[in-house]
Length: 297
Ligand code: RIB
Image 1 (cartoon, rainbow, N blue to C red):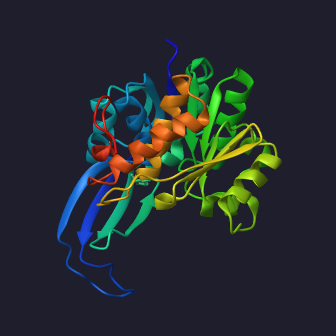
Image 2 (cartoon, rainbow, N blue to C red):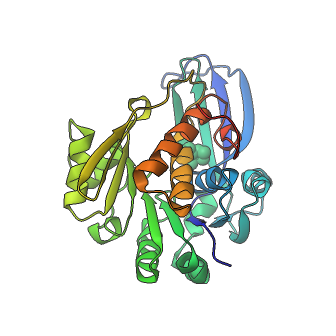
Image 3 (cartoon, rainbow, N blue to C red):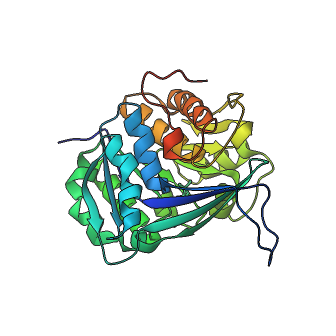
């Protein structure tokens, strides 16, 4: 069955630790609370899209361990098709998220089973990818797989939302398959090989290199985009931020859902900025994402 959105990407368990402040190198601190939540950039994006009502399938891998149950719980809860999520002989991906009272977080990701999301896994889901309205991929799985997904989507005429997060260098032929390419300023600088003072200039430079549409996210600074030669920008919604973990993924998932629903990139980004703003008002990544019909900022 043709899906609105197919996400090829990472699935993690997030060990979230709340601390008063981050430890200095060599220092031991007592944390205040700890919880294990479903996460991973790919799974987060799939859940964000599905909670908005999109028909979503996930392609990825988890281990045969207790973290797999948590890692898949948000996807199951949101009704995401998991037929192409493989169980492999490696630990489920783990992210250790340290969240301090000033709202700053640090994340260490151990890919584990996500490293097993190779080209063969994608080929096994080829019909799903080429039949979907939108395919989403990020850089928390092997980069050769990201390039393979881009080729497959391009050949099959599937709209590719490419989120190069975390920052990575990718060949131009992969990047130009995106429509849109979604990056923050740091990720844009890594792709371009230099930092631009103005995010609009970075977006225009990426478009000049052949990317059909570009979205640069700026956190509290909003979003800048380029599509069909025109630059647009949107402000971020003003909210009391509690935890920004996974806000970028909420943005990408909502953007994909909007595009699958027929919206232009800029219109989909309006929805995505609202969904991302809602997500930062609650703890965690997936548990913070709004459902279709919820009030949005
Ligand atoms: O973008 C946030 C995500 O990054 C977390 O859920 C964590 O799993 C890491 O992948």
